[in-house]
Length: 95
Image 1 (spheres, rainbow, N blue to C red):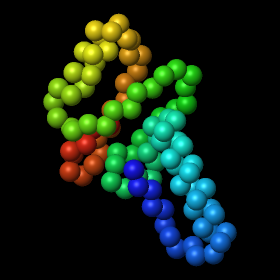
Image 2 (image 1 turned 90 degrees about the horizontal axis):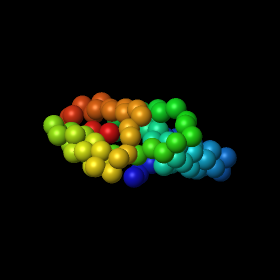
Image 3 (image 1 turned 180 degrees about the vertical axis):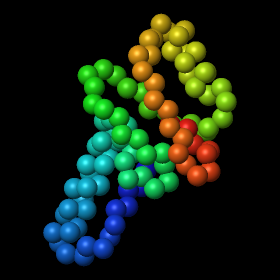
């Protein structure tokens, strides 16, 4: 993952703010799957919750999510809610 915020700020304060922004975005992605402000990735903002969450990035083709759901079913794992996004112009990435 490469996070590259706008680099227009060259002052020390601007650089510190950019560092905080990048750290915050990485934390939101790893903790909650949020990809807000992404340029080349589906933009997703998921609500906070108290359970577990699986994020799966895959080639956008038929059958991928079916295969994942089958693995969960074989292990008696219930899927309470599923969110899917495919907002890339090329349509090659599912999330």
